[in-house]
Length: 370
Ligand code: OSB
Ligand code: MG
Image 1: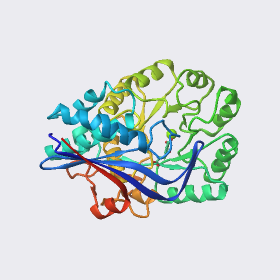
Image 2 (image 1 turned 180 degrees about the vertical axis):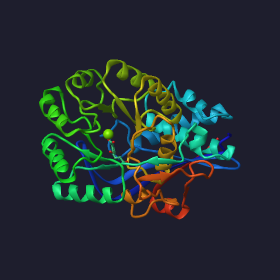
Image 3 (image 1 turned 135 degrees about the vertical axis):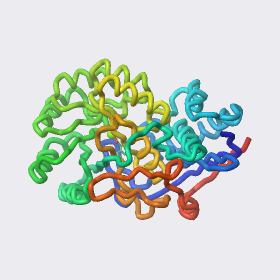
């Protein structure tokens, strides 16, 4: 694959409704789209940053800088890329900046699959033709709004409800949901809102038979999570703490995580995601695919990675209409009545961006050439 041109687009899209987590509220999704152009194909990647460094330290500004000033020049200097695994190896000397790296690498994976004439899922070694879907529901000031959201996604067939929690909005919220909806597949995500001083509160959640509690403690911790897991029945699932194969290996070894939320952007790309997947097979750790409120492009990559066999739990790969009045791809990501998404059979990511819609939501473009 010989890139003739790489296009970076700053995108700004408005979510249908504000999404509140323990670290903030998002209504405008600012992110970056990447296009890698060869003579015959265009590969697409989504950089899952936000405008503010709250979930991770990366932002639209930092990722733009990394791509424009370091990563894209490295790609142009390297020359012909035979396999997308080479992209991750090329970027390895650059520390962190995983979301920036992942966006470019993802575009090369899409290109590679298009060149081979196969779906991205197959290029990755995926084995499923449908994937199971859950939904991540933000904190609501009025619990009746949360009730309405849960009701809606249960009716739509979604296979598990992930409820965002924060101190003061935890035990009572989960109790109320259990009382109202009974024994539905449910989990909680704290986005690092607690410390070991909150063990008593977190232990109270054991009563509700949650599938897991996601990232209860600090974003950069794996020691205290191991201590906490020894106190809890509910499995801990790490999200923010896992940036690499090595992070996953250490967290599993320490007993800090029994399940892993895989976000391709967080771990620096699909090749690293596959290595973590294989490690988790060996260690008996189930995976599921997280989300970053992506547009259809990022969502398409998430669907593809979820076809790997050890993604055994429903992911945050909700359909386009959960997020957008107007998604930028054709067709939209649709969730069937049984709570699954059909894996596309077209080459590459299998969803094409609609040029007019790309332009409509683009706020800045940079065209980089050799
Ligand atoms: O912690 O999983 C998270 C969204 C943005 C940042 C972090 C998280 C999330 C979600 C939403 O939970 C997942 C989605 O629906 O895309
Ligand atoms: Mg999370």
